[in-house]
Image (cartoon, rainbow, N blue to C red; front, side, top):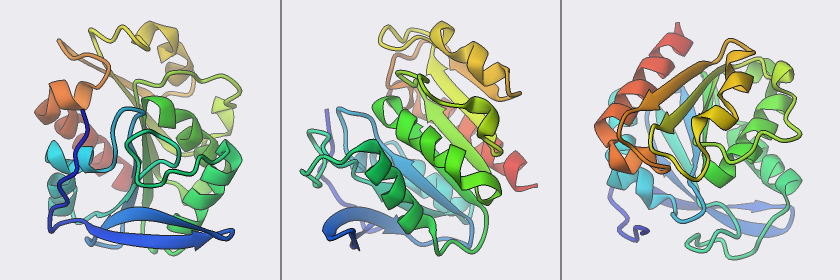
Amino acid sequence: MHYLILRETLEKRSLDHKGIKLTYYYAAGGDDTIVMMHGYSFNSMVWDRIGLVSALGDMDLSVVAVDVPGFPHSVNRLAMGENDLVSFLDALSSSVKGKLFILGSSASCHAALKFAEAAGGRLSGIIIVAPVSLKSISMNRIRAKVLAVWGSEDDVAPAYLNEDAIKSINGIVAIIKGAGHACYIGRPKEFIKILSEFIDSARE
């Protein structure tokens, strides 16, 4: 399942990065910004479809939604290595004036965490949703607050595989009862509530 409808809340933009023109989507809010990356089977429109873009706007957050290069439903057809993707995220977020958050889902979690490793104190919070792997991630290098969200019925990347690593750095683990791997689709209201409460706490 993927979503092709572009609502008025999201503006299609592009950035020339290292000679490559890459597409992302933007919704203006306040100085605080969240950069979001979808999972392998989706594109950026999934965040609008579940009501997350609207909810973040109500929180005065600007939204940068990345169509992850190389994923099958992304408009960015050219695949990128993880280091180049992290460099692209850094370029996208370089002009953020307020607090910066990043969200990764499933296959994009690893790149989000690599960005968090390098961002240091510039990043206020990271949200990872059903991470497939935390391999090679130095969790103790991440200075931002961490939230990890899983569905209780996730049979692709269940929580028990990685939740101890999150708890080891005093990260927050949230399990959405009855939801599967793409828990934000199965239980969007619960997901948005968990995300909103985390961002509120990280802004204090």
